[in-house]
Length: 137
Length: 428
Image 1 (cartoon, one colour):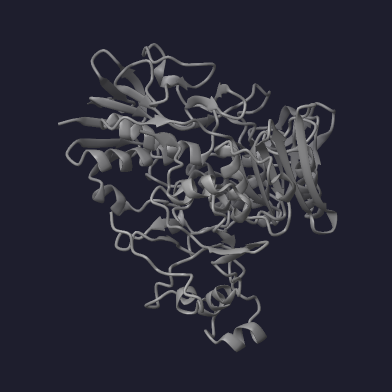
Image 2 (image 1 turned 90 degrees about the horizontal axis):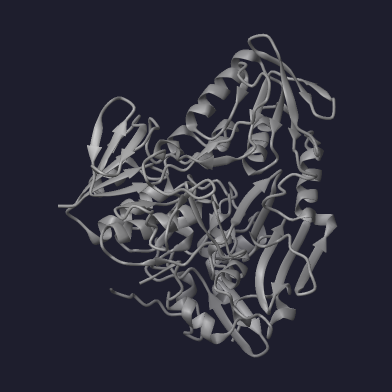
């Protein structure tokens, strides 16, 4: 339905205060949302990192910052290693990686909310359109 | 048991290690590198010089990587000859190794033009970690505050940026009529030139260094135009050429410069493969075979080579030149053919001079063949995907540069393939 609550809760979950009011009132710069809501006429959908099996972003990364977690198979960015060359942005066919705004300007993407039980976007989707599915090989 | 020898520890060599181990857990893998450290990132040397990266972050694969993949690593191992009859590799230090399958992933070496005085102290090429160490030490010792960079390509400009970070005034000397001529379009070059000039850099186009003056050490350079620049530092960055000298008389067939490979990354010798900047590949955007020295292609080729070496037959689908770089604070991406003109070519443009934002798309036969993004690179990969996979854009062409453009505009069929992970750089 295009409410964009997923974007808002993604920003909040990745903010300093983790408080929805404080983030939008006081935090400068705000984190960029790792979930992007697209709209065209009456269609809407949310897109985030697909954690591709054959991930082009990992292949293109010149620093090794973009890597796969051996335990979860999720694709993560090591913010300390990233230098912001944006090779990953160039090769991600989903457009799911963005330039970060907080601290160093490094690549920002969905981390599946590793610190939470359920990703913020999924937990707060009022329509239950976003779900977390584990795919086993 | 299969014995694999890989020459080169760059992205192609390491991708091959990963691919081999996916298929063959038993075989022996020996990785040879002429460097003192394996798996350090060459593009990061400019960041290291400019103090934007710490030494400990120079490695893009940790040392544990080699243990996990059970790789015998030999550093400081420069290969001088390959004997394809006896399947032996000979090293500079006199040692030799035998192989069942060999991968050549030796990358490129900087090209040095015949310029008088180039042997003087203070003249550098800049492609290896040791170059960075030598140059940083030279700058410190000689108190360099003015430098000349010959070559306005990506290496030259990233080096320029690092030197400027160190408070050094830089003169860029470029033979073509603009910097970045090989990778970006005219407008993008113009925007980057302005930005560099604003930061105090001097750009000399249509010009080159004809003579290096000084005693033992460089003191000034003389340009073709007659200009003279006082400097203690000259960086020669006019390009790299495949590092294949050791293959002379080996029987491995070379093209114009690089190693010729088929779509399994196999050379003219059936148990020898090659990948990365030392090869000549099919440039899908022009249909021409040439060296495309970029990281993503090296990784992809290394992976394809590795699979095939280990017995999993896959075919490489070819690559498209693309580059991403941030210069003078402006993020810039260029993909595919960006400098073409003609009746059958349609160009879409968006420009906002006040914010240095410029976007250009090149369409031919209803397909996107090139894209340039300057200042705003958001979601650029979507366009790269459309170019790489030859998607017909005729039905949503008008929306391509709209602010809200995204996956939602793309054909359902293509989106489905993307999501299901069916579009790969290689096919079984």
